[in-house]
Amino acid sequence: MVREVKELREKSSEELISELDRLRAELVLIRSKTVAGGGLEKTAQIRNIRRRIARILTILRERGIKL
Image (cartoon, rainbow, N blue to C red; front, side, top):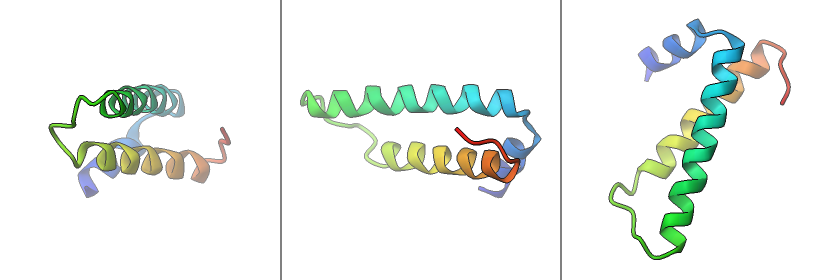
């Protein structure tokens, strides 16, 4: 996790925003699959994506960028 945070902090704000958009789209896709009855192969996947989104939002807020 520490390595992941360091990698995120090294990215530019534009890269973080595009990563955030990608993760949000992926989360919507996974949630729609589970609602449709597709079942989730990796049950921790939603939690991991939500945590990664939270890390990115924290870094952006530290930089003074509000979304």
